[in-house]
Picture 1 (tube, helix red, strand yellow):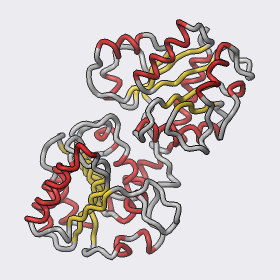
Picture 2 (picture 1 turned 180 degrees about the vertical axis):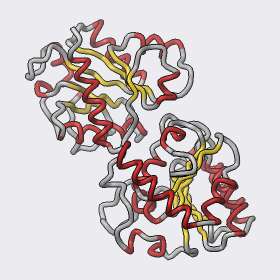
Picture 3 (picture 1 turned 30 degrees about the horizontal axis):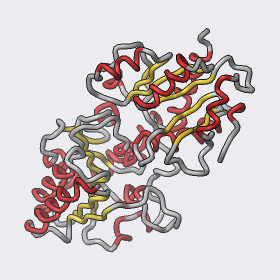
Picture 4 (picture 1 turned 120 degrees about the vertical axis):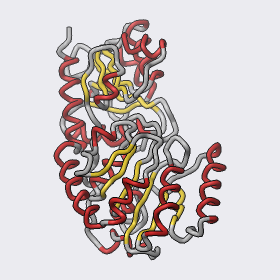
Length: 359
């Protein structure tokens, strides 16, 4: 849905065509922010047609003030290239613009990135750990979840039995199949544990891009040799949402699980544990990304060191499915209280207001 630049106070650029976590954040946040009265629009490539947006050629109008009467607009960058574009428009082209940046990185920044960040008018961090790597004042705004899309089971279709797969209970690992995401750590844990727990079936959902196809095939061969091909199921890529309400989607698969495992070796933020918890599913995660700030150890799930074996923590649930159900209920309560998408939108909206109050 194209909107007028004159009626837009904040721009959320997306300069990467392929789907990414940043793109997903923009797609989910912008409609919620507009419902809250924030005059924001996306701009860039790889965005849904129904997302409120302005065209790139509309940016020529940034020399003029918005119709709201504000003295400038805000350019909300989430990548280096978007920060650079904002700096050029503000400092070289002298457009009426303030530039802010959201950082999700949990590592020491390179010199060029530090140079860009120092030139921001404001900086947000997606977690406390991310904030610790920033050398400038910042505000923490943790990601939230769409609690309508990710919800507890409500029908027979939401139960694992509806899949027709063997077993009584399900444990899953979703996301891109690659070493960085720790898919092998999940598979290794399942090969170790499932022979002792015949009521459980494991599910891996996600795409292996061309450079990681060999990695996925090695995992599948390891599963075959272990004689577990009928109990460790590789679903491949599953749609984020389904046009058919009864069709398969990642959100539906979360609801069918009793336990979700996020074994990433490295992560920027990592939304999947929140998506699982919102679906009333217990979680076991590594300590990558924001996972330790999301999961309450021994209450909503378990956290293990990144790269370490996941099996001991997972076995707590395989041994006692009632414990998984108990932690799942507490995880759902935690997400509803602290991680709704509307809360993230409000935190960012308050930050925008502080920027607009700058002279």
